[in-house]
Each structure stands twice: as structure tokens, then as C-alpha cells.
Length: 91
Image 1 (cartoon, rainbow, N blue to C red):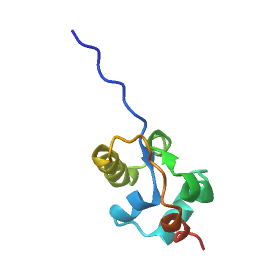
Image 2: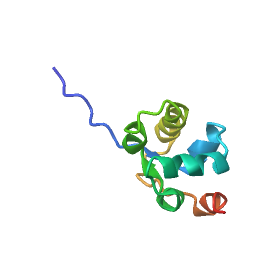
Image 3: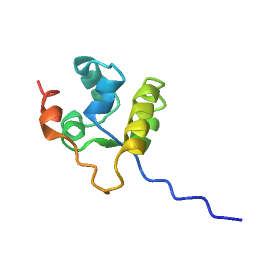
Image 4: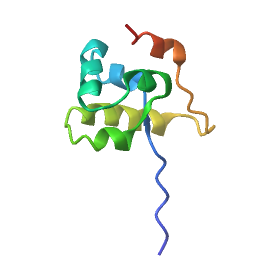
């Protein structure tokens, strides 16, 4: 029997919110309500498990987008966030 492959933590970014067709002005208060740092998210992304832990079904489409993006990313190990894109969510 083979051991299952370790799962790689998925990092959710602002591009995943956009891919899920969520509007940033609506998501910002959602982050506040759940005690999550909006600016930290814009700058660094957020671990998918932290979003999943909210228990809010609204995160499901965003998590799917992040998983698809990471699965299709080159295996270079570099998953840098596009800071230029992230800055568009600042108000």
C-alpha cells in the first residue's frame, strides 16, 4: 500500500476572488466580520484552511478557484502574489 501524497497548503489571493467574480468592496467587510486582516490578505494572500474554518459557504467558489490555479501552476515552487494586482483592492 502506498502512502498518500502530502497535501500542499493552498494560498488564496485576490486573483482568486476576482476569478470567482466576487467584488472587492463587498469582500472587505466580510473579512472584517470574520476577524481576518484585509490588508494582510492583499499583501500576502491567506491560507485556504483559514477561510474554510469560517464555515461560510461563500468561500467555496473562491477555494475552488485557488485550487484550480495552484494545480495548473508550474512546479517551480514560486507562488508569488502579483502585488500590482493586489494593490487594486486597496481603498
